[in-house]
Image (tube, one colour):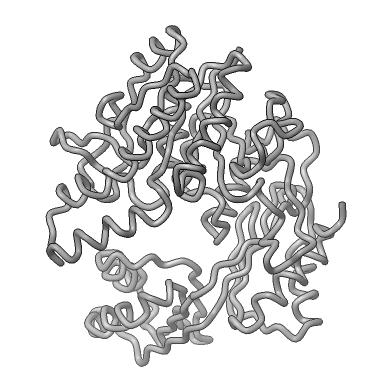
Length: 417
């Protein structure tokens, strides 16, 4: 017998028929003798509808009331799933975030989890009860519902798994695992059997949409073994009840992976913009003068490249941001022109960041050179490069995104079985 947390996203619970399918997945695990908690999202599209209603009610709405409204989507789903399970003879009870409780900070709309008391859930497990938990929500220090931001149900599931010391957290989604790259771009992409927490964190933060970044961070910190699985595979399909080797991708500590590949996957992020400040005075504090105002404006800066002039008196500072923030960023920089001291600001949209990721890169030389050579042979110009121990990110024109992904996927042998 094991303790499992199962999480189902919006497409998995989009209507009553899909909720019944989810219930069959849950019943399979219960019938196998496992203790089960289920975390659910709102039905597909429901959160967007609720958000729109709050905006129509008032453009400048109270964040606490916003949370009260948008958290209701998960409440409906958890109740419906509990009712469905009960009709199948499964002892189930729905839980809201505040009932557990999942305690958060006071950042309504984007709260962070501070603590989970799993005592009541564990006691109910002992009574043979399945806990059906509304994801995406907790209770803030002001004793009001606080939501965790987009994708927050993944974070809820991993946090609950850590709180009840679960043996595993299964994230059921509309794909059957984590792939070496986006199969829509590269049909030869392969599903990974295992991937290390660090690699998954890089994949998620660099454009892969399978898991929410905060959930991977939490899983890595608390070492919660996490499986990405498909909710659309029939519950009684072969292997679905194999606890030690279920279909999907296991995200785990790198020590569990016997032999690491040099490169695990290729991720990409569209809609990148590049801003360059020309002939900035090279003096102490200039970087703070540039990036401080951008941070205050909540603009996320990614790749940063600095080129110092030959005489050492000035520098060109180039960095990337989301395309949607470009006009705002330029306005912030122009306002701070005197404090920064630059001659000109240049901007460019329509760029793409392509990233090569793999823990095996730590112990292998020439990984970057392989990428640069392969892209050069395809006539793809590189605008900026950043690297870490397990990642190389390359900024290119958006028109070459698919060609770059396919080229890198092939040159590292990721299309080979």
